[in-house]
Each structure stands twice: as structure tokens, then as C-alpha cells.
Amino acid sequence: MVSNHKVRCRFRPLVEADLAVFEQAYASRSDTGEYQWFGHSPPGRGLVEMGALGSEGGRLTAVATDDDRVIGSAFWFRRIWGPPETSWCWEIALHIHAVERGRGFGTECIRLLTRYLFDHTLTQRIQAITDVENVAAQQMLGRIGFTGEGKLRAAQWREGRWHDQLIYSLLRHDSVVMPVTEDGHGHAGTG
Ligand SMILES: CC(C)(COP(=O)(O)OP(=O)(O)OC[C@H]1O[C@@H](n2cnc3c(N)ncnc32)[C@H](O)[C@@H]1OP(=O)(O)O)[C@@H](O)C(=O)NCCC(=O)NCCS
Image (tube, rainbow, N blue to C red):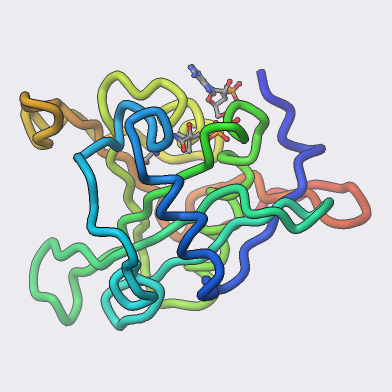
């Protein structure tokens, strides 16, 4: 089990200098990870195309607090389950750079991101979709308190075949184990 209570990371806005870092992070199957490889993207994408700005979602850069190195990025976008004025929620996705995985950063980032979105937006629901074989993502979401809601059959086309996906959600009033504070004490909270 990864002990996330010693892991320190934070989010900051995406800046121009991050673009080259993220282009590299999405440049190959070994960089993206097998569950996020959808082929090559055009190089030199700008901040808007990377989803940094916009009313339909956003993106933040994750950095390690010890030396401020970029460890990954998180983004979120609007999903609609009924009338768009009322029945919308955020869907989140996280990418930790290949060399930084398995050290607790992913879990800590999802905790920080869910708190950020519940604090700064009116969303009632945050959802995440992950491949049925993506054990790391499933463990990460479960550790934070996301509830598995079921399987979406043949929902994603990747590398020549359809892949089943699992859908998870965290509601505003679900209990979440929040990140430890600077004095080292964790606290339970609701988004
Ligand atoms: C999924 C991802 C974000 C997890 O980030 P991470 O920093 O590696 O996650 P953590 O170190 O916090 O580990 C999370 C859990 O997964 C487990 N885990 C990590 N790597 C694993 C692996 N390769 N196989 C199985 N379990 C793994 C950890 O043990 C931990 O579970 P635990 O807390 O019960 O011990 C990261 O692997 C990644 O960016 N993958 C590529 C992109 C992707 O698949 N994103 C998910 C889209 S929702």
C-alpha cells in the first residue's frame, strides 16, 4: 500500500512552459500508459487546445512540493445527464508522468482536485471513467471514497479494439479522507 500521508504535491495553473513537458508526456504509449494511448496528437498545441481555459472544464499542473518539479496534470470537463442547465457534473482525468507513478502522487492529486472542484464550483457530482484493466486508477479512486457505479460496455476505442470502462462518482456530501495539513494531521471532510 502506498502511504500518501508523506506525499506532498500541489496544483498550480498551467503555464506556457508546461506545454513542452506535456507534449513529451503524451508522446508515446510508454509515456501515456497503456490505458491512455490514443495515438499521436499534433505537436505544439496551445494553452486553449490543452484545455487550460474554458467554460466547459479546465486543467491544472501538478507539482511536487519539495522542488516544484512538474509531476503531471489533471483536467476536468462537463458531462450532461439531463437538461444542461441543471443536470451537469464534472468528469475528471489525471495523468502522472511515467517516472513519478506508484509513489502516492496520483491519490494525493485526486484528493486535492476533488476538494478544489467542490470548493470552487457548484457541482454536486464528480465522476471518473477508467479502463476495466486499469488497476492503479481503480485503487486510487477507491482509496479516496469514489463509488463504483458499473461497467460501460465497449465504450472506448483504443489501439484497434473496443474497451469496457468502469464509471465512478464522488458526491459533494460523500466522506473523503482529505490531504494531511502542513502540521501533519489529516482530517475527514466532505468535498
Ligand atoms: C492512474 C494514475 C493516475 C495513478 O497515479 P499514481 O501516482 O501511480 O498512483 P498512486 O501511487 O497514488 O497509487 C494509487 C494506487 O494504485 C496502486 N498502483 C499504482 N501503480 C500500480 C500498478 N502499476 N499496478 C497496480 N496497482 C498500482 C497503488 O498501490 C495504489 O493503491 P493502494 O493505495 O491501495 O496501495 C497513474 O498511473 C497514471 O497517470 N496512469 C496513466 C494515465 C491514467 O491511466 N489515468 C487514469 C485516468 S482516470
